[in-house]
Length: 417
Image 1 (tube, rainbow, N blue to C red):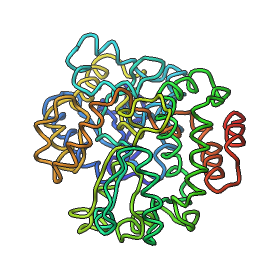
Image 2: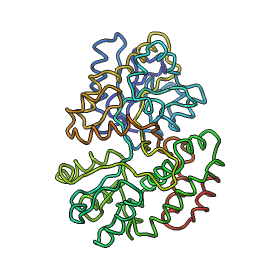
Image 3: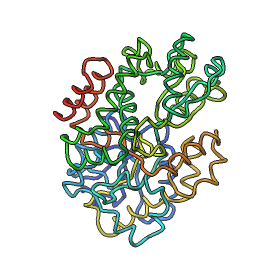
Image 4: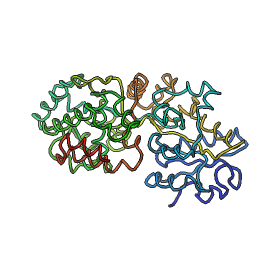
């Protein structure tokens, strides 16, 4: 695989803690946010005798490269990940440094981050990751122009949401954009509904007790609600052929063909890049409403809390100290400012005063307050569970939306993963 930046061969045949030139090998997922990590490497190298070398791995192959390298001489010293299931196997094999010891020695480090985001990267209550990118909650977006034309307001309750479905259907507008060819977009609906019906504890039980725990009333109720929404026409008739990766759903939404879109917070950046006029004046946002009879806290959120730095357990001595100092840079105000300049919303607990510098301060404050006030932030199931579960999970979700599985059949499929 071609690597941009430091070539993989430069990672050092000596392996973690023993690369040929004694440098700190840092791997990051290459995308538009990588420039923030390039800048922090430059700042770190001005302060450290042990220099960091950044390897930018193309996103398409990042997970595979990370998994095949760990445990080999070419493994990174510090690397980007999603927490949860993306590092679970490494933790079980004692490949990662337990960062709780470092936090015990530096109380300010733990206090530096929003607790729900820091904890979302933990495994069995132990922290193996330091938040290093912006927060990514799932948000209910709406098209202001479509709402204005219909004389409608954003939903504050589930009853409001159901009435809006009928209102927009009557106006010839698809109520919700949905990229049915990309199952992870449908998963956001199931995750949000389970969180509202049963709370964050439902999925925590599944993580701790295994696949049999899918047999929870909240999961069944969520599946029944999905079927009801599909039957009501919430997603229109063509969602099965709409994509997200090629901007299909987002374009329908921006062009007023759909009124609302349940999507990760990156939808703002996506619209800004592809439909800048809509992003500036037509894009609205609100919270996912509570559901009748639900016991979940309506302030809780789901999505991808952020990304994390983890440290290879084989890194020792002065190099381990350097690695710890490097990941601590993610707690600095300068790092938060860099994230904001990049259009991201930082996960540090004291970032409120910095958000005025964001390109859209109103959106940044909404997102930041949403997450900071949330009692729980549930990591997307396909990131939280071990990778072997992702294909069958996506298949089951897609079949539920397509009517190929009944709600009860959906539960059986999940239990059989």
